[in-house]
Image (tube, rainbow, N blue to C red; front, side):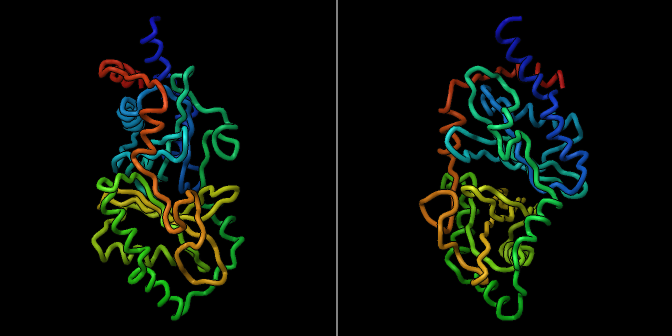
Length: 294
């Protein structure tokens, strides 16, 4: 087997591996409602070559993507095909497929200890989220609190900036954004107000996902919005603060630039996905050769 044939074989092997099968099963055969998924691989293949293979493998298993794939560079040395979301009955979890460049592996599951929380396939479902929410003493939302929440959407600079960013991702070179807040009430209430406001400005929501994400050594809450129009994914993130109903975050979350937003750019993605290693470009014939094995 020559070198190019070996590369094609290794890519094909991954898409027939247990890791990829388990990822698809979280869409097809979940044991409980699954909200969000992180998968981690070592990779040496150019991402533009992998995308049609990912889509073809999903399609071969009855999973048709209902939106474009996003590209996010979450941190130095790591990139992602972000927001994979197949159409289907019921709730389908948004899935982020992360990779790090590998000089000696073509495409393989990442070692568990280099993924997240000791695994290379991490997911959050209803049971996890119910338990995580139980630690907070969420306050009752009465008339005054409703007015504060409504005012945050109608009158704050933070919300106005978020709507601008979401409608101008390409212009601003953004691939993903978090809007950081502090709240003391059940985030489901926040989601209800957010949906109403988004619909009023003409945004069309595919789904809204309650979940958590890592900030330093702790998890914080977020609601991930996948929009059909404009076709973007963004998060309203929150830290519990018992002393305020809602306000822009007063402390930074992920990046140290500013507390109110964390912004991921195309440049950050390309630093890993394009300039982060000597990626292998598959020819159209080689991509089809992999697809033919699925």
